Length: 199
Image (cartoon, rainbow, N blue to C red; front, top):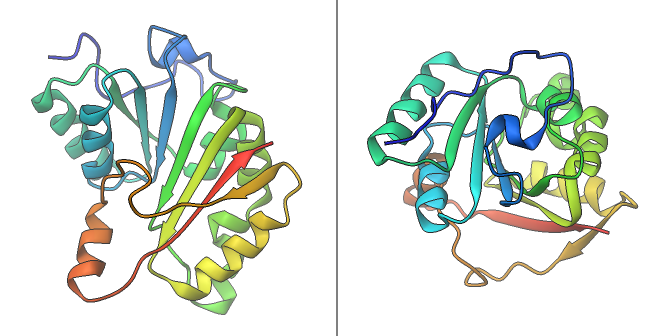
């Protein structure tokens, strides 16, 4: 069983965290699952990579509780979940230069035109925050079934000077599926994927 509480609650939400506040060993790679949903991706990745630490970020309390139960049931000491809004977490809370990978998988596409400004891929707080928190050569991985959102998101990120686009073949490395991805694939939808590295 984990030697710590699966739900990570910062003692202060208004300052930048240190990596060792989230996981004890600051030398281990830290990966972030942004909007972790039911935790299926988070759990699978933590099980596959016991040498890395994984923090899931989720806004909804019910989902956080379910993910915490799954972490405890799996006996994982390298996974935790934080209940907080995604853009704020990246923009202000995560430690500078300590994140090796950030995963943004099947985010809300906000399809209505009046809601487009809410899309996390185009929020400046998120863009600037990710550039701050990623370590040198750290990676940002993005997947969505929504083709228009994928086009808008990749266009925005390809234009950012701090990142370079990488190839991402399907079999390049182990990559678990999210609950949403499995639903979309069962419906015959295709997934769009893009990967960037911090320069």
